[in-house]
Amino acid sequence: MRGFFRLLLISLVCKEINIYSTGHGICISVLKQENPIKLRAFRCDGHSCNPPVGNLATGRTPVSLTTCGQNSTELYCFYPDQNLLHHVSQGCGQHRCTKCNAHQPDNSHLPSDMTDDVFLNPLTWWQSAQGVHREEIRLDLETAFYLTHVIIVFKSPRPAAMVLERSQDKGQTWRPYKYFSVNCTATFGLPDDLTEEGSMCTSRYSDAVPCTRGEVIFRALTPTNKIEDPYSAEAQDLLKLTNLRLLLLKRQECPCQGLGLLEKPQRFAHYAIYDLIVRGSCFCNGHAEECQLSNGTGSTENMVHGKCVCRHNTAGKHCERCAPLYNDQPWKPGDGKTGCRCHNHADSCHFNLSVWLASGKQSGGVCDNCKHNTEGHRCQRCKPGFYRDRGKLMSSPEVCKRWLKGCVGCLRR
Image (cartoon, rainbow, N blue to C red; front, top):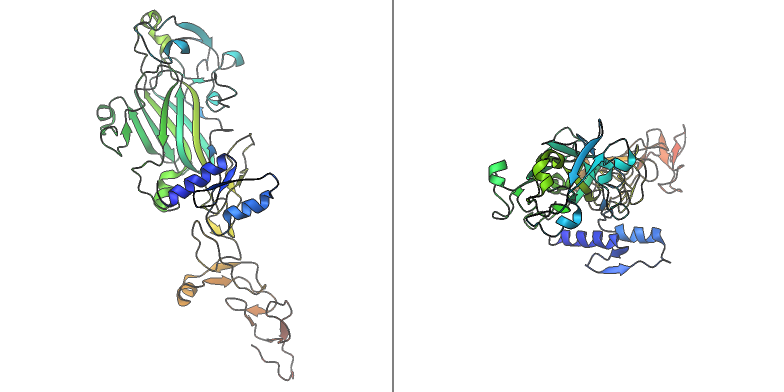
């Protein structure tokens, strides 16, 4: 990433470690005695700003098609981590078998176990029902967020084929982020990005080895992406999402000759995931550096919230419009908003393209519902039947006086 993306990345990384960026690639420590409100203002004043990156999965529970022991207790088998973590030999060592039941806390492996704290609960995992060939895991977000990368840590061998998808319309339609397969051409009819850079499919994360704690990693921004403006329609099309879906399409077994696998293959036939980590940030169009709770969501420590605390005189859940009195210029992401000159006689204004073009693209604000007997695009003159009191400022609520019959010098201006 070059140019703006480099500065954006530096800013986000600095925030994650409790320091802020000057905008020139230099991070400055935040002293405890500094006023946090002033620091927030400094970060956003005069330039775009963004909320810190966090784990979007924290505080949110994924949904799966099946769960081990959902209907009744199931017996399943696996090979302990220490036998498989680093290498696979001809013999995988002694397998272990145990039971799972989704309704018994000590024996359950629920979807929520994928998104609990990876440091506090490193040995919890979600597990599918036995024998399923196709599984689906879906993470629904209450609003739009920006995605940076996804990390999935499997307890079972990684799938031989899977797809990572996103939705931008709350699950109405879906588009692929990446295809994963041991053979991209045979499975999806796509070239492998190991041989053709930029391909939508990769075999990099589809090997069965390591048979446990194998990772799948997806990065939304790669060197092949030529996006210069992070707020452009192209960037939003790539990074913005409301839902994430993982389609597990084909299981594969650990390539060993363990006795249990030969005798009872069905007990090893499941998907299992330790951790689902979805890194991203609140989507604020470059006009906020912090976000608050959205309606209908609870609060969990380190949860990434979705309602922007807008700056730059913007408003809306994602700072997608100008604040009521700041429509003098058309809204756009990542910059400050110019206020309308309504002389304190209006509470809001709107942008008018004709006025904008007539001014040479300098000002397009039209004040709404002028008060205090004023009128005009800027509430800059008195209404018919009133005249301007030259002894008062135009911003005074009493600047326009009623034109009385017979008043000498009472001219409407």
